[in-house]
Length: 102
Image 1 (tube, rainbow, N blue to C red):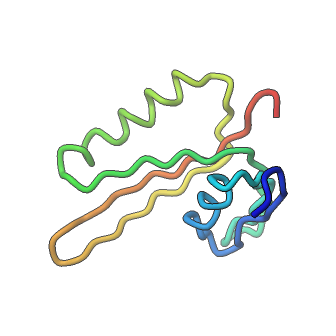
Image 2: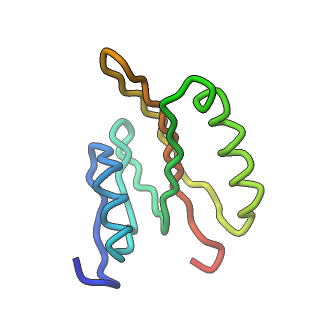
C-alpha cells in the first residue's frame, strides 16, 4: 500500500488487517461497527496482547498506563479478543483512537 493512502477497515472487525494497513503507512479513517453499523472514525490502533497467565492478569494495567501516558489520544472504540489452542491462550485488547490534532 502506498504511504499516505487512505483505507477502510473491514466491517467484520478484521483488526489484523487494520493493523497491517497502519503499519504500511495507510491512514484508516472509518470502520462500521459490526453490530450497530455505526461508523467510528479513528487515526490509530494500539494492540496489547499476552499469552502467559501472569501477563494476561496485567493487561488491564498496561492499557490503563498507556491511556494515562497518552492524554492527547481520545479512545473511540475497543475490542477484546481471546484465542486459544490446546496449549496457549492469548488475550488481546485492541484500542482505536483519534489524535487530538487529528
